Length: 186
Ligand code: 5GP
View 1 (spheres, rainbow, N blue to C red):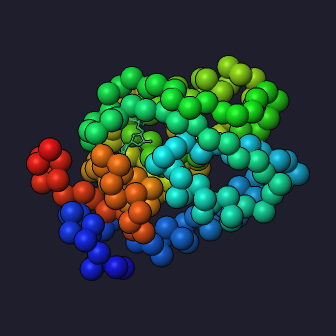
View 2: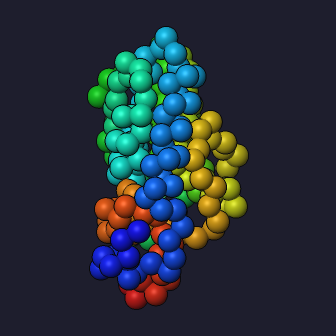
View 3: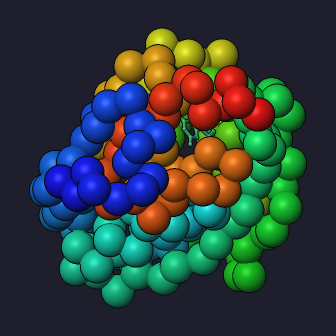
């Protein structure tokens, strides 16, 4: 744990360490490799939050997979979802007839993944599974269950390992709870 970095001063606590993340991602990669044996899934990274997780995860999967990226927005510079999901950048290729795995950083209200699931199924994906690093089940507003997840977390606003607050903290190697004084200051 590298608690001497300037950004760590803004954390209330460290929730998941770099080592725990590495181990969980390795196990998840093995599981996806087994589940999709003989297939070539399209893995879709939901930018920007899932980027760090996605880059680590795909390198733990031993399959001829393809990757693509989507950008959706629902938060802005806030710690609460606006409830309205907007598609900012779409996929480059069609997913018709493909086995799709959506890779997200966190499921909170479930609105983002619900929107993405409906959108991609509507485009004729052969199968669709949801893979998320973190799950905050206490805050669900729509019924949404991830097919793969690494950690259940309590109802707190977390940053690091790709997750931001106002675009900062994505480069922290661990995941921590952001100190409320940071967003109270804004
Ligand atoms: P949902 O649509 O499920 O409410 O929210 C999903 C998105 O909200 C995530 O992709 C993530 O960008 C953002 N989000 C939800 N909870 C947190 C959190 O604790 N920390 C950060 N940094 N983002 C969050």
